[in-house]
Image (cartoon, rainbow, N blue to C red; front, side, top):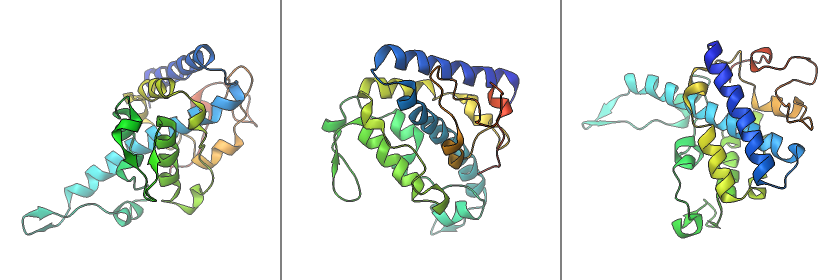
Length: 204
């Protein structure tokens, strides 16, 4: 990830902070982790698409049809498989009226807000790995739909497409990040840094 992309990502983080301070009654402690969760979801989607492209290059053909990709194909490449409902492109392109869209979870429960849909997406991601169980934030019903939709749009940029494992945090690291009152959640607890480049983790 080059310096320009890093600056763009940091600018988007601060833009989201300004939006949340102006458009919600939530404190920084309340919106910090959900924002990081959206960033992780966007990064995971970017990695998913790259790995999917690699898989499709050598995909077997049966009766003139390319075999669909499966979760096991991603596991072989140490990447997360994302069901459609957990993919960032799906979330960012949802209609404004979620209730009218008649979106139903696997258990048959209808989801009536964007927050419920994003919570469900986080649950679907967690289901792909034992390491993720109970880790990702699921407080998105605390956000108004229009505010959450704008946050999704803010982070739907190409900056995260070039993020490597040495820059982006592991989801388990969400529990080790201190959310300060000034929204300076870019700093790890044990580090005095203040940029994304100073936070290191292993690839997913």
